[in-house]
Length: 188
Image 1: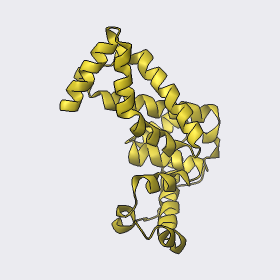
Image 2 (image 1 turned 135 degrees about the horizontal axis):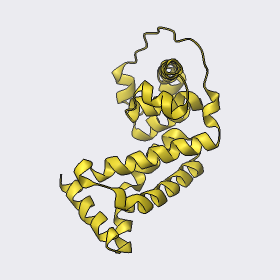
Image 3 (image 1 turned 45 degrees about the vertical axis):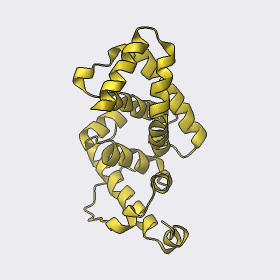
Image 4 (image 1 turned 90 degrees about the horizontal axis):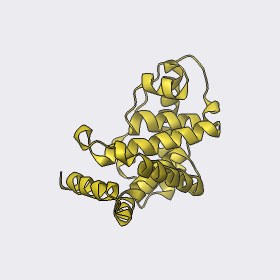
């Protein structure tokens, strides 16, 4: 709660014209938001561009933030995610979805493999996913969207969203449990 109260006071200062206060929010959340951007694109420079666009939108929309509806981090994180999705749509990255019938696959990964990954390693593994898989995986598993929401936002069927998620999990499982990955990351 302390961080939330602090964010509210910083936002209030910014809205009263204290431009230096915005740097406090930027310094506090930029690393977290860059990691979000890196989950959606492979290139660090593209992620940095998305981050910059996100901060511009956050600044411009700051007066719309309502602390009674939630914490600043949740509100601003949504802006970052939406900025990433808009950028992907512009670059037609979402054209790479495979539209096939949903197949029933029971995919599971061992917690040990995931537990041994650092945040940077996990981000790299997610970045290695094909664009369609990566986008649905991020939205569903990490950002908490439902398949219905994903289908609406990405303009794909719910079945395609579910199939992309299943394929992403299968790809990640194969990648994380591969001997090459384990040999490279045995220090984790």
